[in-house]
Image (cartoon, rainbow over all chains, first blue to last red; front, top):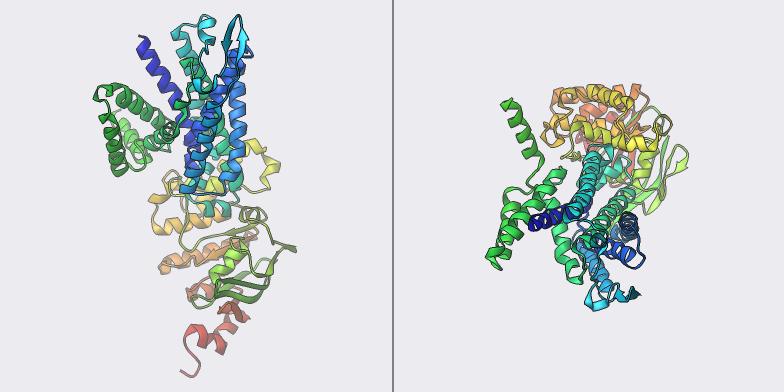
Length: 298
Length: 250
């Protein structure tokens, strides 16, 4: 049972991470900085509950705000680089964040034992849930409440004018600015909101895994973050969820027995997906095909 | 309303615009013609702020546009269409117009938040009217990329008008059109003039330019070689030789 709850938690966390990149990708910004904002959210929330004994909800919300603010700051220089250079710049940012936390040593003694981030030894003992008597099921429901909220909010915003403007900017910046859209405001806003969401999911992640290690926040995580919405399609929030279930559920867990061959299979699947479904699994064509099929059935 | 003051723009060694002077009065349909490479598209790009001029200034309604970015110029009332259509292909027809309907006037009728996240009845009514004007009501929920060529041109025009401009710059809107479509475009342009929009028409298709414009400027090598009403331009010898390809003696 615990194994499945763990998997469901991972899917939830990664879905939120994917959605944080989803908005950015819609504006045409290919950013691998989500792992950095995720890390900031994770360590901030954990430090607040462990060292400052905060309640989980304000801790996670504060982590979200800090990550979002950092994303806002990153958003401006990000405007000056495009395409591949933005990928490189955001990788550099995420690595910087990871190295910062790798070196962060902030030990505090409480009740006779030392707690807090311990530099290269990582940050263990994030025991908020167990200290407060939460069962594993409680944790899963708590986490997924946030996931559902974020999914609903992003799905709703996709259908507003703001959602259309985001995608317009991603498709054609020249045309967008010609109809009065301020590209700077849109792109920095997308980066900031992406930072909020990534920070939120990081804060939840830290308490769910109970110990943080810098290995969790590498470029690979940033790549996963953008892979989910790209695979799932940028027109639909559910695409990202399906992509996460597919990658985490099927590939990572289900094919664990294949061992290292998994990476080869992973790469092969990405190549196939790009070839046959370049707009993602849930592109507009597929969605309208499914809609038509459902109408025919009734 | 719009004054082009001695604009020069060069790209490396190529002088696209060379000391160009134009003045467009409010309410006219002003044609700009000239051979390929005479600087017509560069002129639109300079007016819209895509390239800053090397020399000279663009004055709109008495105020210099110097230093203003493209989106701000759109907000002051300058709209344009593109020579090769630049719609938002993955958005629907309705969404293409919705994105553009962003003019400053709306701040008084709707709050800022509502403009981004709401869909008021005013918005729905206005977009519906624009769709009807463009004969695109039935295509409202179709992706822009699935439209036929003529429909895409009409949508491109409608989207520019959706920004509620004072002046509209049309960059070769008749390219690729057949006679019926050109006649349709002619009546649309006249209709927009009646709605109070000043129009600058950059075109190669002579029957449209001569038929619909009040005044024409002829460019060659980045500067103005003639200006006048359509009859005067057709009779102008310098224009005939440089561009229209015939002279009275032929």
